[in-house]
Length: 144
Image (cartoon, rainbow, N blue to C red; front, side, top):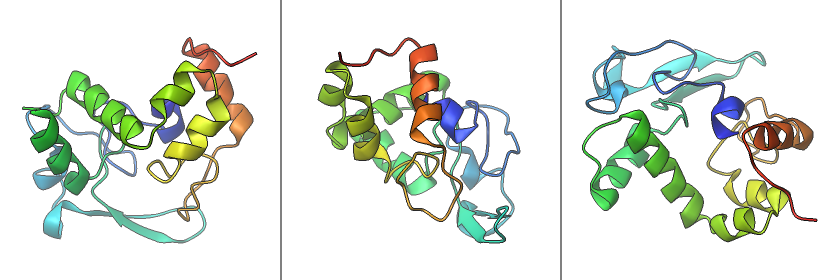
């Protein structure tokens, strides 16, 4: 669901370009701007500067923290999945997911992912019905 919401694959840079190789978080080597940031102007004309990359659009600074904490040695799809799960866990959403409390779980993690409803990050958000449909399509179950 998160990959669908973020509109990204494991080798996607923010803004839609792709990168090669999974040895490290790509923004420190693929984007020719200072500090690994890319600049993107969204449909509303708002300029966004970020180092977000991968399936979950994790920023370079967040990735560095996850690497250290979790002992991750690369930016592979498996490592990205592990990192995203840690971010979900840190927000207390795992128990909510296990209980089938989808909307509550989304509310818990929406500050991390700008594409989720309620994130208020000045980027396009999907509505709850859309992300819930992606969740169900991915095998997720709802309470009741």
